[in-house]
Amino acid sequence: MRIENYRCLRDVDIRFDDITTFIGPNGVGKSAVLRALDWFFNGTAQTLTEEDVWAGAEHKRISVEVEFCGLTDLDRAALGKYAAGTADSVRLWRRWEDGTAKLSGRALAYPPFEDVRRPEKAGERTKRYRTLRGERPDLLLPAAGSAQAAEDAMTAWERDNPAHLVATELAADGHFFGFAGQAKMTGLFDYVFVSADLRAVEEGRDAKGSIIGRIMDQAVDRGQAERDLLDLQAMFNDDRGRIHAEHFEAQLEELSDELTREVEQLTRGRRLRVTSHIPEMRVPQPLFQVSVEDGTANTRVDQQGHGFQRAVLITALRVLAERKAAEASRTVFLAIEEPELFQHPVQARTFASVLRRLAAEPERGIQISYATHSPYFLETDGFHQIRRMTRAKEDGARPSASTPARSRPSGTCSRCRWATRASPGRSLGPT
Figure 1 (cartoon, rainbow, N blue to C red):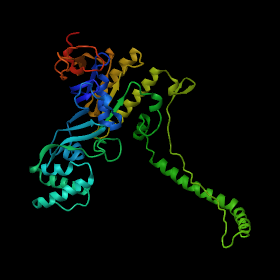
Figure 2 (cartoon, one colour):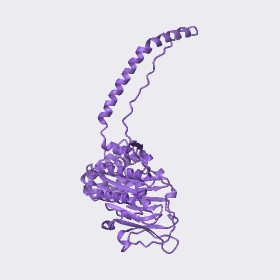
Figure 3 (cartoon, rainbow, N blue to C red):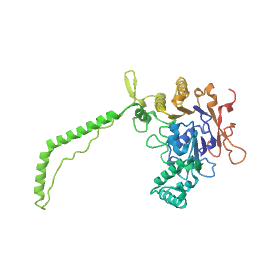
Figure 4 (cartoon, rainbow, N blue to C red):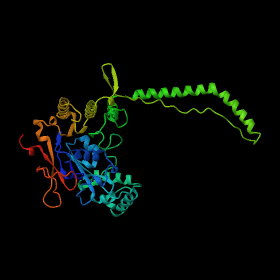
C-alpha cells in the first residue's frame, strides 16, 4: 500500500507479508497505517476532516493506494475491467479532498470513453454518450436512455475490442467494498480492524455488523427457524382475529348502533361504526448472546476483567477469520492494534503463536498485521516481516519524503511537520 498525507504519514510505501508487525515509539504512525486501511475499505468522506491531513501538505488531500496480488480466475471475473485478461494484480485508490471521498482503480479502457465517464451527474454522462455516438458512428454503439445503459454499452464494447484498450485510471463503481449487496470485493477480501478501544461488550452482541453477529451469520443457519417463526406468526395473527371477532364483534356492533342513533339527532345520512383494530404483531427473530460460565456463576462478558474481555474479542475475531477464509478464494485481513493490551505475558505469547499459525497456512487465506510494543509478537523466524516506524526530517523547513530503505530516527515531534518512514526489519541491525 501507499499512503500520502494521512496524519503523520506523508508518503509511505509498505509491503505486507502474511504477518506484518509494526513497531516503534508512540506517535510515529503504527496505528495510522492500520486506520488508513480501515478508511480505505470501510470509511466514508464523513470519517475524515482536514485535521487528518498531514500538517505539511500543500493541498488538503489524502490518498491511500492498495494493490491486491495473486488474483484467481474468480477474482478476475468479479473485478471485471479492473482485472481484465490474465492480470495478476489490481490497484485501487481512495482519495479524500474537500470533504469528498472518491474511489478509483487502474483498468483497461477505451480512451474516448473516459470523457463520457468523467462527469459525476448521470444526465451529463448520458448526454456525452449520445454526442460520442454521433461523432463516432464507426463504433456501432447502441442507443442508451440512461447513464447505466451507456456504461453497459461501453463495457460491452471494451470486452469485444480488447486490442483498442489502454491502462488508465477510472472511477470505481459504487459499493466496491462491503459485507453485503453487490460489492465487488464481497466474498473476495475482508478487512477487519480491532482498535485498542474496541469494547468486547459492544462487539459481543448479536447485532448486525457486530463481530458476534457476523460469526452467527457464518456459523448458524437461521433459514428454517425463520420460516417456522413466520408460519407461527401467521397462525398467531389468525387466532387473534378469531378471538377479536368472538369477543368484541357483537359488543362493538351494539355500540355502533347506539352512537349512530345519537348522532342522527344532529345530522342524518351518516352512520358511525366502531371496529376492532388488530395491530400486526411480529414474532422477534432469533438472537443469541454470549455469557461466561465460571464455576456455578453465569455472568455477562462486560462483568469480566479487561484482559478476559480482550481475549474474548480476539478469539471471536479469529473464529470469524477462519470461517470467512474457509470460503472459496476468500482472503481475510485481520489488523489488530496493540494485541498485547490487558494481556498477561503468557497469554500474549499464546495469542502471538496462534495468530502466526493461522497466517502460516496459505490455504486459510488469512493475512494479519499488528501495531505493537510487545516483544511477544516479534519472532526471530519472522524478522523480515517487521516494519520499524520512525520519524525523519531533513535540513530545511520541509520534511523529507518517506522511504522504506532508510530508518534512522530523527526528532520527537508528535505531529507538526515531521514525516514517517516504514522500514523493513533488517534495518534494525543486530540484537
